Length: 272
Image 1 (cartoon, rainbow, N blue to C red):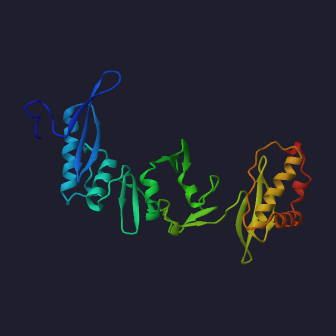
Image 2: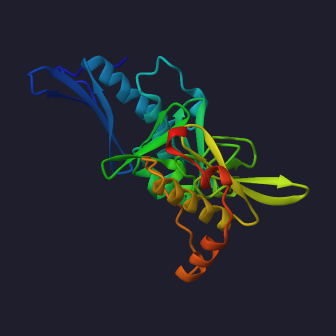
């Protein structure tokens, strides 16, 4: 490793001071007129190693994402950013690598999400985080599940309300996502070769509201069940379905004609 210059300065390394007076070292480089921060380090040697590694990534085309090793002085996220800049000419602050018809978002070397290029601008400025099986971004000060960008409700269950067509739950390309159930409480079922929609509502356990011919009717039936329960004194906050594509008079006509399970019609609050 090349040592410090005669004045004690390591190339690509700049000292800085925290508010508490502690000194640390920042590493950075310039490539294609782009100034790139490589991170902060506790000593100048580590910072200089990161600078050398970053320079090598940008100039050695034989290095790929598969070349990454855990003892690298650079974080893996920075590897992805630098290699994408080298190969595709665009620098992103998030660990994105562009393909021809999609891009890859690297959560780790072996955990890779796939997205349509139409989503590139959004995810280049929104860092993805993970909690359990769910992915989030920070948006306007709130944590927002990325699934909501694709019409997947927060309550939705994979395999029941939506599915990944190719079976890959890391592939968020729109062509790979199929919404099976759009509304609260509604589930699509197959019965004697027909597609029907069954509705359930949770009080202290699931109550069946009924089975209906269309998803729209089922959504309205769920709303009607909410109204019945509220009138009976059930104090629970249900989220009604917003049904698009029909007028208020059409909604009212469907609402009044729908049959609801007698168990709900005769429900008593003592049962809950």
